[in-house]
Image (tube, rainbow, N blue to C red):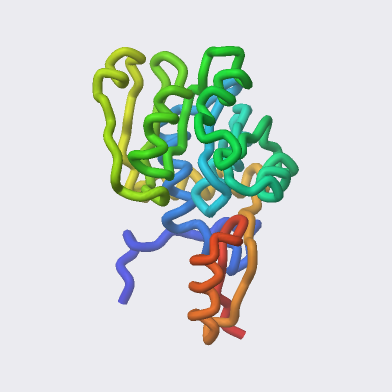
Length: 218
């Protein structure tokens, strides 16, 4: 039996496949930006990449009236992110010191919120791109675990750094209410039959996906 505290009602405006994308990725983005970050209209949010957490962060930031800057190594993915409503984008492969481009886009001010998914190597750039008293939400380490961080840089900018493993049940329920009220839809890159789980994992490993990959039972 499943304990009632281990489940929440799915948004009524989503299909089963769409609702299945919400645990972990969506609630983590919501918890970082909305529950803890209190993102508001006029804020600027930096989102790293175009995977599940990143695109949910784009969705929720836009829903709250914030401007979003997306980074990726793929120009095609950046174009798709801007089609979803991103204010601007930066190709970090073409611009290794991408924080400089972010500062240019914000007239030198920096961003209010960072969805940090890269790890120690990208954290330095995230910190440089942050506004004074900004917030950095550390969620992943897709760029590796090696690297160094100077805590004095955090002190100088008075940046708030949080580790976000996942969101709470309370955050999940608040997110569901918002998804229903605003008719928000997750970005699903591709679906696979549940018997094709190996192919789905290989697709994820390739890095070609834009948004979530789902398994369906037909």
